[in-house]
Image (cartoon, rainbow, N blue to C red; front, side, top):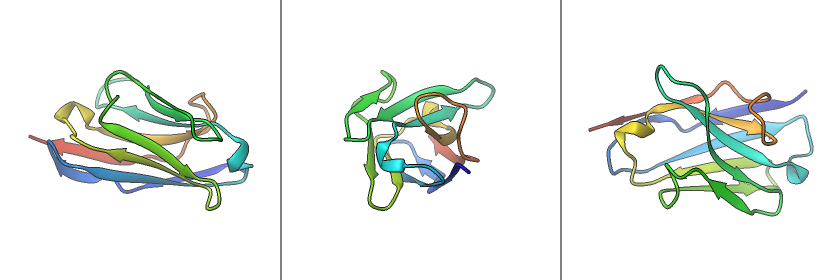
Length: 114
């Protein structure tokens, strides 16, 4: 059974930083693309970043240069470093298995205050 558990969300001031973590189990993490997704209040799901099994990354234009996705295949852990956050980064953040949004965790809330 695929299990993804996000953590690390919270309240942060604009311009600040935060690290999100995702613990994965139930599949071969080291051989799987992983994705960070977010859902801003009142809006749909949007892709934030992808990372390949070997560490190649892709970012949406909204976060490029500010966020960094990484992974530790030895620990089956996925990370998202949020830097220079803006109020528009406020959202529920999810990690997802693969490049679709189907298999994702319960999410962790990030709220950016002015």
